[in-house]
Image 1 (cartoon, rainbow, N blue to C red):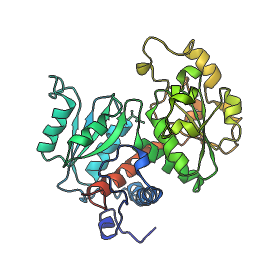
Image 2: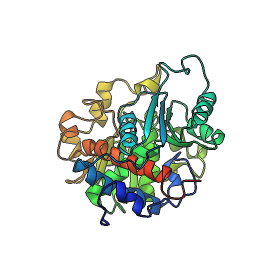
Image 3: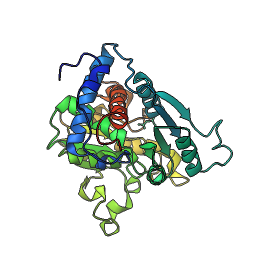
Length: 338
Ligand code: CP
C-alpha cells in the first residue's frame, strides 16, 4: 500500500479507471486493471474506516440520489454511508412521499433529478434494463446500477470478489459453488461474470425449476450469456466436492408468484441447505459467502451463517469501502468523467 495518510489524501494520487464508460451498469464493463484499482482503493479506505478515521470532504459539492423502487438494507445504507463519509450530499428517494406515488414515469423522474443538478443516481429497479434505459436519456447525470430485476448487481459482485480475495488473494483456479435460486438472482449473474474474469471455475447447484432456461436449453442462449460457461450439478454433495467458496442464495419468494418451483421449503432445505453436515463435502478451509438478505434455517443454517467459515459480516463491512472507492472514482478520478 502506498504511503497514504488519510482518505482525503487519495486525491494526491492518480487513481483512475481505464474504462471510458461513465455509468456502471454491470461488472463486465470493468477491465481486470479496473478491478485492481477498485480493490486497491478499497483496501486503503477500509483500513482508515477500521481505525475510525472516516469522514472526508473529497466529494464536497457533489449530489448523489439513491433511487430505490425495491426494498434494500445493505445496498442502500452502504451507498448512503459511503456518499456521506466522502462529503457528498446524499438524497434518498423511493415511491413513498415522492411524485413516483402520483404516477411519474422513470424517465421523467430521472430528467427531473438531472435538472436539479444531481451528479449521480444509484438506482434499484424491479425491471431488468431500467438503468440502461436511464443512461440512454441522461447526458449529465451518471448512473450506478444497484440491482435491476433478475439481471445485474455489479457492486455486490465487486464486494463478493473483494471478500474472496481477502481469503485467497489469487482466485485463479478456485472453485465457487452457488447454491439456490439462481433463476431470479441478479447477484448470481454478475458474480459469474466477475469470478470468471478472475479465473474462478463456477459451478451451480439448484432444482431445475430455479435455474435459467438458457442454462437448461443451450439452443436458447446467445454467445454473451454468462451461463454458457458454468457447470451444473443437481446433487449438493457432488456440487460441493473440492469447493473453495460456497455461496447459498435466498429463495426469492417475491418473484416466484404462485408456482414455487419445489414442493416445500422443508424439502428444499433438506436437499440444498448449507449446514455443518453438507459443508463437510467442500474443502476443509472453504469459506461461505452470502450476498444477503439471508433466510436462516432455509438456504443456510444459523450455525454456519455465524461460524468462523462465514464471510457474511465481512461482505457487509467491505460494502462500504467498495462503494466509497467507486463513488470517488466515478465522480473525481479517472476516465469515468466525461
Ligand atoms: N445484497 C443486497 O443487495 O442486499 P439488499 O437487498 O439488502 O440491498
